[in-house]
Image (tube, rainbow, N blue to C red; front, top):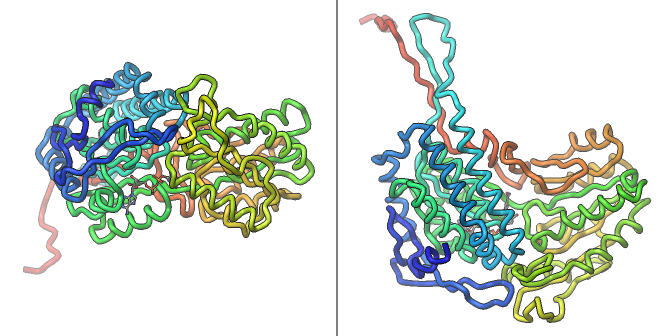
Length: 506
Ligand code: NAD
């Protein structure tokens, strides 16, 4: 696998089955966030490269075999891809770690989840009925509703889970019979490049899977507006998502947006009544906020804890957060990697500074850590940070920080807990912790978020839809709805005994 990514070098743009350099010849260095050193060079595509890739995808859709390939064969190809991902798990996990800064173990888990997505969509299409027969009320009418691929899909992905987010789009797009152009984040393209190699190895015909490396403002924007693209599926921040929707509007293409989150983690005092309950809730609050240094769309970045247990809870949480081992994701024993870039760390620092200026109380972190053998001084590290005494009017509570920063708010009543948890423009995910099952379910049913966990945080299932309420997006990934995004619905009405209707006299 290392050979495959090396071999492409600067030729990382894939169109019509061929690897090419950027038309302009421009390149970009890919940095390892753990030491800020380049470890790869890729092509820096622009709108011209996007156009070539769309032309290839359009031709493969309009004239190629893939859209008409039987579902069982499409499913078999997806299963071969899953097997190749399992074969290359170690190398891909390592590559994801170097690209995005996560620990290698997190990288391996990501690759397992990517393979799961390919298997899930393979199973889904393989088991489907080819259409739904509708009772038209007459034996002379045969009426059937069928689903067809939408066409050429532009798939634009972020840097935090590079291959996972790409797979939640690529697997259903292929399962449904589409062709696509994927544009990974310009700073983390390596595993998506590798996946294109695996799709080819699995036997996908040329032109079905195309990839353009390069920035959002040129490649991404061109894909979103392109008249030959039928659907754009975007995962990223709110600001870019709005631009994508605007660029897509004049051509009335289908648009799916998976955007940010500001996710509440609501802890009722009753869960802390036993030592085990307390320990579990604290442990999971740490995971919710700090896994992948908080660079997770569904991060539990807002702890909303019942006033009576706040001191005990936050003291234990901050103690444990201080002990998180920060370092290069490939080092043994490291629990948390760096932030993805210098810009991301500066953004996080600005949020923490604004929170302190607005009256938040720093319980731990709030700075860059000192150097250590497992942590080069040049890496983009930032200490896990807990900010107490926060409230709804603070910028750090209202906006997505996307870093290792947890804010603490308190409540006294169930009503207040629900109000705080829903007090966000976003609505991606949230959790409620309570030993009282009836209360937990009652609160869960009132949360305006696309995923709600009860006494847990972060797990997702490929069989269950993922997506947001409010400004966390439109549409869903995963589950049957995640496949439906990539389809058009067609009603075929057949008159078995046609005769004149005589509406017009002549
Ligand atoms: P981003 O919006 O900066 O970039 C995402 C992708 O969009 C990149 O490939 C980028 O090059 C491209 N892009 C940027 N501007 C564009 C434009 N005008 N037109 C077309 N494409 C454009 O986001 P990011 O910083 O890479 O990722 C972090 C964000 O992603 C966070 O807000 C996070 O919450 C969100 N995210 C959401 C989910 C989810 O499932 N809802 C999952 C992962 C990440």
